Length: 265
Image (cartoon, rainbow, N blue to C red; front, side, top):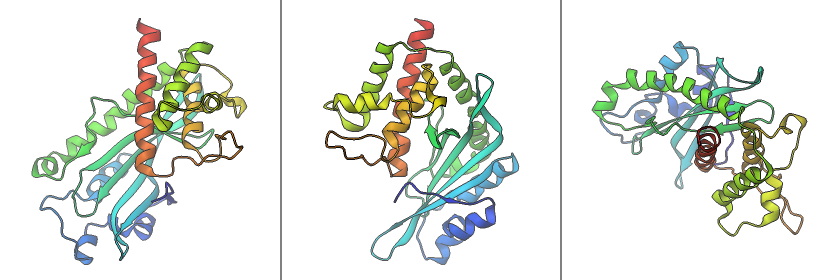
């Protein structure tokens, strides 16, 4: 499936474009599921009550008959913004993904949607368990799991604000870009690809603090037609939702290392 959400602004519209969100969908489609399958709607309702808005939905189909087996829901919160140097740089974002049959854990990923370049920057606190298994224990503990997710937003935002107060020199920027490029292209990544990751593509990205450099690198690594090979051909970006989140998590781990090394060593 392409990394392409359908924009929606209400729960009713989300159901219209992604009917597999509805708890009755699996029964209507005669899909076998686990006894304690956690329905996505059970996650959405308390989040919406606490101020989160559904911004987009997507479905993944499988098999020759094209049956829907997984859905993705993107949410944002209007009051949980990222403020860097007194400017609103982005807003917190949750991505929920769930298999209709419950064969894999329900995933909740916390990130930031950066408004300047429409980047979705996904990072995880390693102490936060974001995989919710379809078991009786998880089912009974669901309210606490949701509250834990909401609480983790503040910790994530604090880390991003620390990034904005760490300035990088040229060697540090090159080291970060090279390590980031290896995440997608492997150890044999070409030097000209690494250099392009540090290109300034808009005036808002001209600073050399860790937060801004990270965004330049992240955009170049994941977006379409930004990197160009030696033959002058633009390279495709990361167009799979799971791969996009995986790369961004690894990128965020790199950045956390820099926060520790430059601030506390």
